[in-house]
Length: 254
Image (cartoon, rainbow, N blue to C red; front, side, top):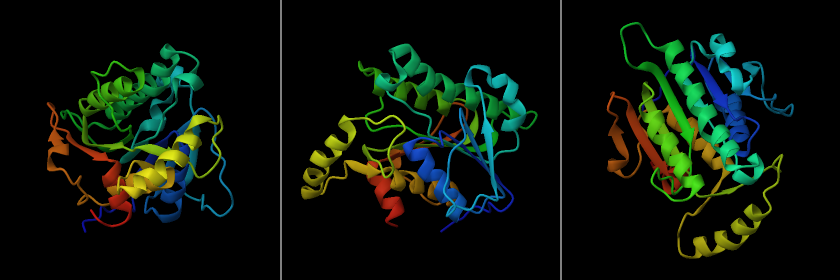
């Protein structure tokens, strides 16, 4: 195992009030080795007293005016991005794209610019992005197309490392702020069927968060499929972890 020395590093978490982001933040605060953990969002995340918060800094930002928050994005090492929504929650296709893609890419651009050494194309930052199974920039459907486009653009933003996580159906462990009525129904129906055939089509949000954290801390963890590791045009190391990888990382099979 090859573990990064995180004792003097800062982690940044986007989307920490969401289902995956909140579990990731909890795991980083409880088990991480960072000197500081910055949670960035439109509102503060509420954590119970069992979660250590001495290293936590919460930054409430206006994603429509990220330029005003450049100082907050300096000196970060690992960036966990779990910003996401649905068309139904957003209210329209345009609003979905704004939250799910524009906010992600605008944040990434400023982080890259504020952490890039002079004379270098790449910022020494590991950007870890929670995408989705089926992400495909050429899809005819809004959700996978937006995710696929975001993945592609992040790969060319200018980070030394980009890790993409593509979970399957998400099984929540805490009630969502905006309940998704079909989500628990789909999980309840599909999970036993998937398990019967040994197919890992459902990932707990807790497992996804832990997998993202483990990949940030351990540079030896790779996707099982070697073709999922590539160098981008500008030299970023881009790795894509599928739903099976996510399970295997947490259960020590990768």
